[in-house]
Amino acid sequence: MILLILAAWFGSKKASASGRNGILWAFISAGVFIGTQLAVGILAGIGIAFGEGAFG
Image (cartoon, rainbow, N blue to C red):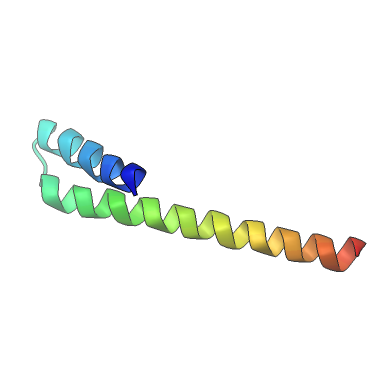
């Protein structure tokens, strides 16, 4: 949870420093963070399931 907050904060800070909408980029960076976490978890699960099926 802390890493999600940090990702949103750094995204907002960087966007505001470059003249972009900080709140929008905070939501985008938080969404990308969550999506990456889900994708890694799903791919790890698929890899574990494949290994169990292939090697017993």
